Length: 173
Image (tube, rainbow, N blue to C red; front, side):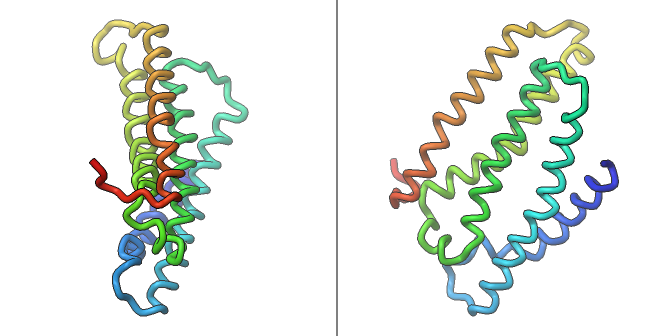
């Protein structure tokens, strides 16, 4: 699936550079631009879906050992997918008008960024730790760290979707 991943990455980069205004749906903007940026944002889901299916099917017939690094990889798929699904809600400008500046956006941002960057970073660290240090990492402590992080992350950020749907604004101290 190398070619599919490469093409999907280029597609996300190209389409993503065209849809920057989906972060600005609440500013005065002509209707045709709102529709253009909504449809463009939906289009980003196609190459993203190609990547997620590619990663999933790579594991499908593989001889997987659920060690710490793989657990973080699967955790990335789950959290990033949740962030992507909530992103399709926010791509619809009438919905975004209601959810803009609420905790729903905070939850979406964290699921995409933590899911897309931090889980893979921890997985890479767990995978490369023996090569970097010359010592094996404790698999038991690694599993504890994964489950503590995964459960803690979801307990912290998943309820924020509901809080945002109920209208709780961001920046509440």
